[in-house]
Image (cartoon, rainbow, N blue to C red; front, side, top):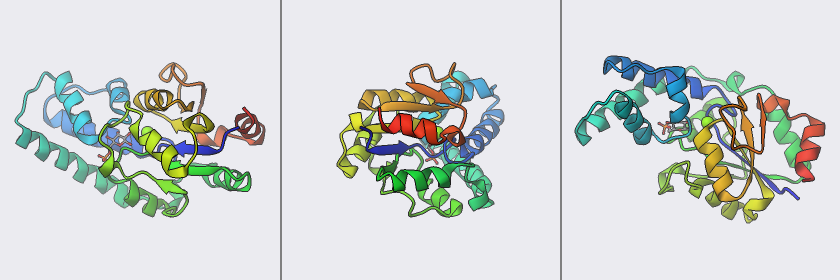
Length: 217
Ligand code: BG6
Ligand code: MG
């Protein structure tokens, strides 16, 4: 029986995946690198420096570590400008009802976000205390697709990974969930998330019958 849900944040609970894309696209344009939405799929779930490396590789651009750190900081400043105007209204539909249902069913919840801005985004969304556990990406050695962040959440909740459902919109995140030994619930397009056990378009698609099916697997 499933005992916990472990959620990604960006692109699962709110539309910050789009903000990350816009900020990276701005940086890529400045560097003269073509960067499409399709290219961005590879960056989803990947940490800040890892994402920058992928963009530089795409443009075959080589930079010093110092220049890379400056660009990553610039991208973060641009990203934070977009986050600034966020409010509880930016929480995706269905998230709060889902958490009420999970709580009522005695299911634990955790957040497994690669973002160093996760605490700020939770604050903006008005849900700083929604989770039983929030993994601190500052203490994660190996980013997604490594399973470390999902395993850290399972351990902190005291629940075996096989009894957890991981929820992710990113291919790298789904890989991490599967490597952790959890059930992977993909959010988005089935084509992009082929490794997931089940793909649904949005969290709002988790209605009562689906939730009952997931919890009694
Ligand atoms: C992940 C996003 O949640 O966080 C990635 O999917 C992002 O796109 C990563 O690069 C790191 O975020 P931040 O806020 O620490 O730069
Ligand atoms: Mg995501």
